[in-house]
Length: 82
View 1 (cartoon, rainbow, N blue to C red):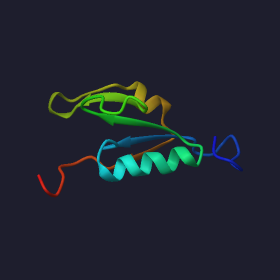
View 2 (cartoon, rainbow, N blue to C red):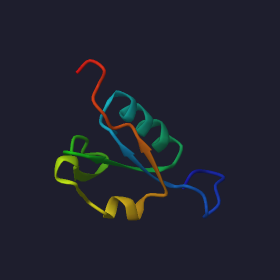
View 3 (cartoon, rainbow, N blue to C red):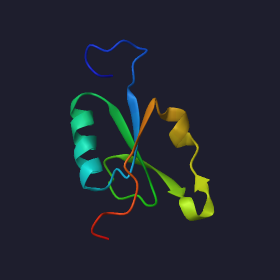
C-alpha cells in the first residue's frame, strides 16, 4: 500500500496497454510509490508484472483482473507509428 495511505485508498491498479512505452514507465513509477500494478493485455510480455489476458476480437477477458483492481488506467490502442 502506498505510504501514508489509509486502507480505503486505491492500492491495486490495472493498466491496459501496460507493455507500451507510456505503460512501462507508468508501471515503474507506480510501483516505486508502493502501488500493486497489473496489466491487461493480449499476451504476457513482462514477467515481472502480473498480466491478465484479454482477447477483444473474441470478446473474452479474464474477469479476475477486474476483481482485483481498485482503479483502471486505459492506455490500450494502436501506436501512432503503426
